[in-house]
Image (cartoon, rainbow, N blue to C red; front, side, top):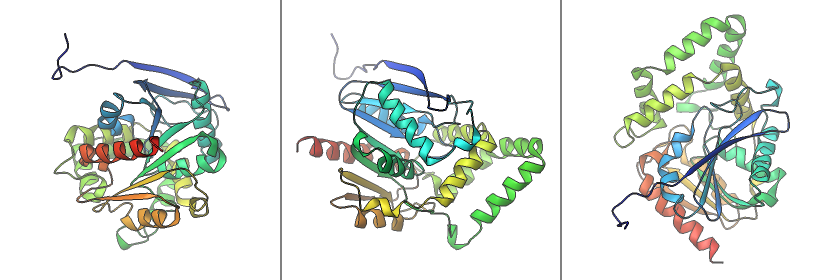
Length: 298
């Protein structure tokens, strides 16, 4: 006999499918019900969603996948295919592989422009969209009030082309150490008082293992992306979540999306950082569950 206090482990199914260019894309599926796809941010990993996976796999078919070039979705057959257009086709191929026509989608940070571009190309795949600390255009133009992110990125990219081994070692050394974990938190990526340190540590180590050429291509897409024209065309229920302590993507970017997307819903999480799903998982899960329940009853 199972009591309410006993934990029921939900089976995890894993697999690969081949993208249109032959790149292997790794995915995981848990639970049953309406499909709910979670997309993490650039250089992140599935662990960013572990609180949501545990919660929603009890009521939904929860689907995660590694973005091309990340972790198990390697090698990428052609580095020129790190475009939002190809990323969108990866989502379409994922649903086709799983024999799904539509799904609810949740994107975090870079996962939001990822969803916007996918919606522009394949709106028929969407039941709803939820944006967590996202943006429709480059949020790093004046990071911390200064225009240094793009020049720094271009400098590092150029230097990596000249000295790839040196910069690969520097990248791994800088990202995979406790100091980097603390800086990531202090820089607004996490609420260091609330996020479990093991989650920050796992993030840093995941970033350090990402191949720099892959990161450069995706980051370049982020800098160039402007999906503001897509916002007014969205016709599916949309939920926008913002953290009021998010320095990387300030709330002005989320409010801009809310004001432009017709009938969208918006919630501000007090003290939330760039990773509200880790800072305040219970509150985020509650609000997302309420949103999904409301739209499913219509």
